[in-house]
Structures are given as C-alpha cells and as structure tokens.
Image 1 (cartoon, rainbow, N blue to C red):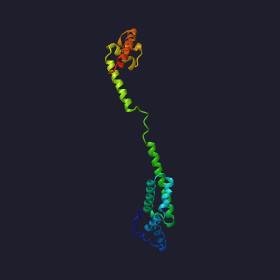
Image 2: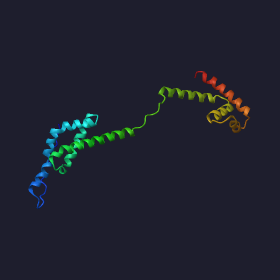
Image 3: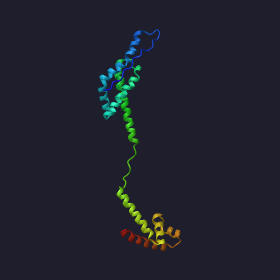
Image 4: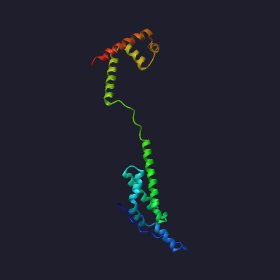
Length: 191
C-alpha cells in the first residue's frame, strides 16, 4: 500500500496580533501526518466509492490516488481535520465523473464502423471479372467497342451515341447488339 511521504510541516508565519490558538487550529488540518492517517484508515472505503462509480479496478485506484494527491496539494485550504475525508470523497466523485466523461467522449470520437465491405476473395473475383471484361472489350470491333462504352459506361442514350459517333440510330442498335453478343461469347470461354 503506497504511503504519501510526509513532508515537514511548516509552521505558518505568525501575524502580529493573532492568537496562538488560531495558529494551532490552522496547522492541525494541514499536516501531512493527518492526511497519511486518513489514507491508511479510509483508502479502501474511498476505493469502494470509486468502484461504485467506475467499472474497472485500475481506474478506481487511479482516481483515489489522484484524489489524495489533489487534497495533499490543497491541504492548506482544509482547515478542519474532520473535513479532510469529506474533501476526499467529493474529489473521488468529481474525478470519477471526469473519467466517465472522457470515456464517453472517446467512444463518440471513435471512427464509425465501416459499412459491410466485400471480402478479399470477392475483391479478387471482381478484379478478375474486370480484367476479363477489359480483355473481351479489346477483342471487339472498334465501332462495337465505341457504342458499348458510350452506351453503358458513359450512360448515353442510343440517340446521343448516334450523334456522338456520327452514325444512324439503326447502326448504333446493330453495333450494340452484335457487341453484346460477342462479349457474352468471350466472357463464357475460360481464360
């Protein structure tokens, strides 16, 4: 069990006109020895408090240790030794809240899950299909390839393809029909 190393208690400078009894009351709540005794007596109960607020032991221990460190550094503000435990409890609660807030924020900032993606095998299969389609397209006559590319890849209507290529609408239909038939044959034959 870690123990907070006692520091020599510095006696505050005496203000002229101040009673000696008032100095003793301030010094009693600020001693490191009192905080060390509070640590020994109440560490487990503060750990239990943190455990009710947080879900893992490591975080609970961190919160309680941080609470003791913060109260130790602000011990001059704790004038009444009886309030030391109350300050510690409040600090444990506040630090637990902060830890939970950080966790929630971390969860919100995590990247959103990726949509269902194709497996590596599917990706490889798709690549093979694309490669075979490209190879089959290269085997078509020039006009058939032009009509199919403009019609299906550029998403043009038959009239737009006819205008672009400078041929009749009937020619576009004929080249398209023959090109699709040739693609079917080429895609069915094994590579």
